[in-house]
Length: 113
Image 1 (cartoon, rainbow, N blue to C red):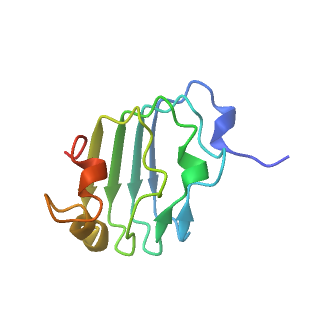
Image 2: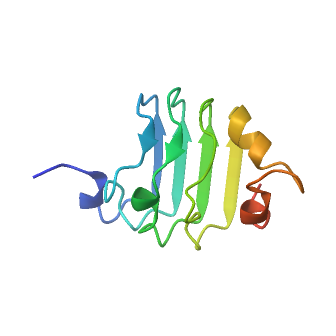
Image 3: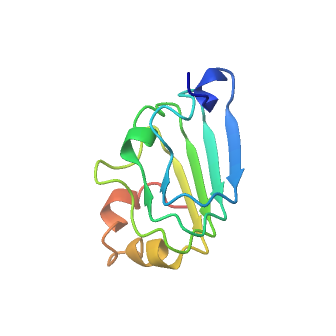
């Protein structure tokens, strides 16, 4: 049996720091009850995994900080429950989310903090 945070059904807020993975989160790693997720200091993170995010139907806040190699969000988009997105020190992603001209702008304009 693989261990994951999905076994913590009452977990609402999670801050994860300093992971070396290129993709995050793994499918069913996070509990669907999360309302707030902060990803901080993932120096090798290149993409957010759609399969790992799609079941987060309660997620309202997503903060992404110091993920210098992160370029984009999943093609399928972010969870529809998301009402706040904060991006800091993620130059590639920040560029793609620029107001009116970034490729991700149409997908995040309503939730970008």
